[in-house]
Image (cartoon, rainbow, N blue to C red; front, top):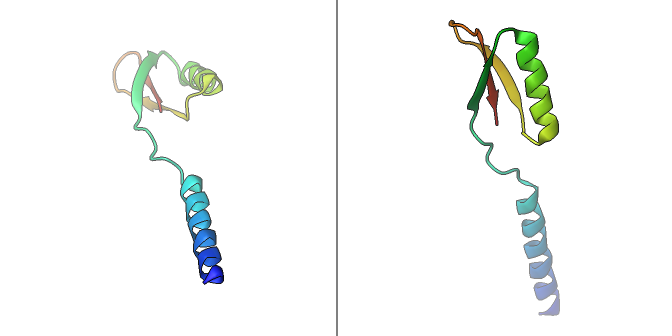
Length: 72
């Protein structure tokens, strides 16, 4: 009986630790600003990553200004 409780406790602890290791669902991309050049967009994205955002991407808008910064 004592081994059964120990095994059950060990299994519960393993499940708890495994559950903490699973990453949270990623936040969706949000538009943040537009830039006149891709290099300016990348510079701004890298700056925001250093500030704590999870990621950035720069996409073409087809309009002026041509580069859209997305953050998550």
